[in-house]
Length: 302
Ligand code: A3P
Figure 1 (cartoon, rainbow, N blue to C red):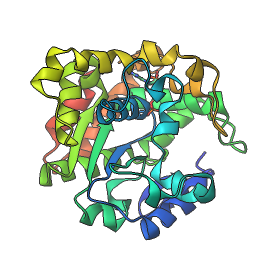
Figure 2: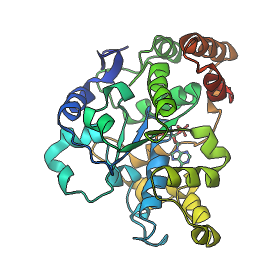
Figure 3: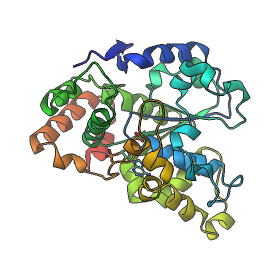
Figure 4: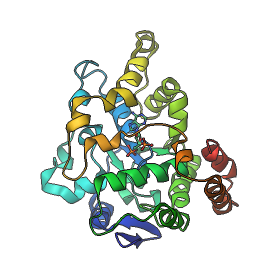
């Protein structure tokens, strides 16, 4: 059921995000030093927020005193589109010191012009579409986010997903927008995969730090800082913090951002033929874009 989604410039946006998206498109004033964390929902946004916050603030707080121990990562790194919308409740964007970090689910094509024109950088995290679909389904049901819409049964929801009707979908278009921009301008967009972070977090932390201009020195590496940051931001650590077990923002339980944190959980819910269908769909959508190998890499966990 797509009632709680509206199509805007080819993408399916949750109705409640429509005004914030348009508002940020029109009014957001990017700075060259801004860092944007972009993703489809349920692709590792929370993890990326924790990592980037920790990398940037490593000289401001020690690992045992970081605000991450007492705040959900979403409170420390607000969503650009919601921040603009919530306006008065949130800090004045102009008063936030550099480097400002925001996250967004907006497709690349819908990003405010000032983001595209400035030198600010974006880190995109992508996840296997089948795991993303399952993770999103749990999140939706657990939080009863869309009050008027009864969750569809899994086959119907999957059908919608295959038609591209999914928050911020179509999945393939969202992914391709950032993928192409990372190819065209590797200084503007860093394209990451959830699965790669799971496989080698130390390498990923170094890569992220380098990209956002917060290179980790040899000295810091020797001190084991990368491992410390990785452990601090690990699923097990964040999930078990009091704030993430019990805390809540206005609509969402913090705990629902930490479910299983695994690669391949889709196999517990979707049939091999459903997986095949997505694989074929992705191949078809990406054909001619020169990104087939990328699709294969993304689907390689399937
Ligand atoms: P699952 O539902 O598959 O467990 P987002 O942060 O974009 O909303 O994505 C949420 C997904 O990332 C959930 O996936 C969640 O468990 C997982 N996740 C959250 N924090 C994580 C972390 N530190 N490491 C790995 N996965 C994490």
